[in-house]
Image (cartoon, rainbow, N blue to C red; front, side, top):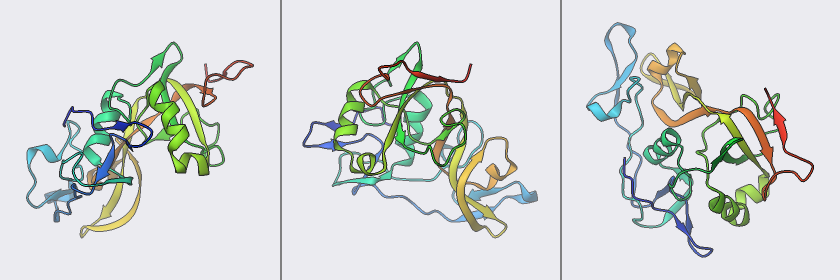
Length: 217
């Protein structure tokens, strides 16, 4: 994966590292069945199409900075790299970390996740403190939908997000699949997913004045 930082983090130009550019394309290789019900593969599969766990990944060309940014689309390789190495999703530098854990900025999902944020599954990579302040100011989605700033002491990889396929191969649905689920063999991954544990919830500009809310042991 490319290591060059591609984020433009001025108030005028704000392109997150994980965003797609118009000069990049998501590829659509032909899927085939593996013998003996072992899963699916690309008809022209190469070594780099799978990770160390044997999970098949979506393909995309890599041309950061070429063309115009597509903020709503996430580049599969850069998202995976940022999640795997705990890099800031905006600038690709190291994510912020202190005694309470690694810093995450995520959409407000309190209505959709029991015991939030403990055990929450996230496909958004973490973030550094300067890019947190910038993102809260300029991102329309975060302003419209609300957001949470969370630190997690533990953040193990859980699985992947992507389309699951049945025999055919025929797409069934899109969702999150754990590494222990047999369906992982039939799920080309588009995003790496982590679980947040031992969480501390912060205000967007720092801890709650009354003290951070600690969830979990």
